[in-house]
Length: 442
Image (cartoon, rainbow, N blue to C red):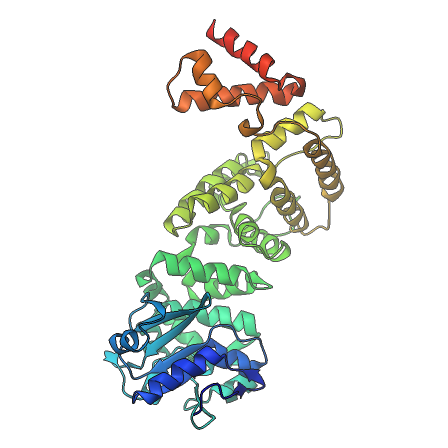
């Protein structure tokens, strides 16, 4: 194999860095094959992104051979090489109980047949011992050799099977699906962070409800987000055509494909079963928005979401039941903006629209949402203060005038001042706010 030889897979050019990595491994007496998502996507006609190499060189030897490159280890048996800001994984052949000695042995321990193929750069051929190309023609997700063994090696593969079926529009082969049913409890062995990441990938497909329904039927959902199942087959009231669970799924499907929006949709009514009460023959869900926000917080903490993500999602969930009346004053609109936060307004409006549509009776609240949104935007465009950083005084001013030390009290006073100028924007002048602070001191 010559350096910089232009090679392609199904017309897709192999990056020169991958050829260079492979060449160096081969010249030093090791095997090297292109594996993983790039090969699969190239064969499917998609733009390949993640180019990985499998080799019989140990991670220690890979480090030795590529000393001049930035490199790090995140996964056992894998060295990630960095070139021009891009990451390329070089993974030592897998085998039973440790490293393998051949590409065929390595492929036997990969998850699904369409991921268990390799490209031999030297001979320009695809190695496909488990019928991955044929399964791609049949549009089938099939675990390699024995699904029970593959899922036992890494139970997260059960979620990956569902995600691939959604992304590719494939069915899950019956034996593979049966193995998920029988092994669902094994997902408990997987780190919460990995489950979180796979859950997000499922949420971001075009129709997440199909994935959640598969997780429900196989028993995975009971292990991952059991709170969602509390709303399964739970009827609501005349405002809703669907059960609580179905309504949540409809909302998730209809909202834009954004992680925060999809998570907000997933959790917006999750506590409804907890607060569901029948009053005068009608189901009521008093306080469900606040209860759902709190439950969402608990679930997201368990799944190791960041504090920022938790704050943004719970803010949208807790505020999603806002009401709008045409006689609402501009002052009340500004108070709403302050409570929700300028950066959260757009997402909240999108959540409310999706929630409205998911009632199942067609649009009901859409015109009011649109009018409210227009009024909110009109207020935001004006030079009004909506956060403490917009105030004409700072925390230092508060501390100097009131003889305070840094601490929560300073923030409380700034918020108090913000509430005043939200009602009366003309008061947002330094002299006026200092005067108010002196009155507080007096």
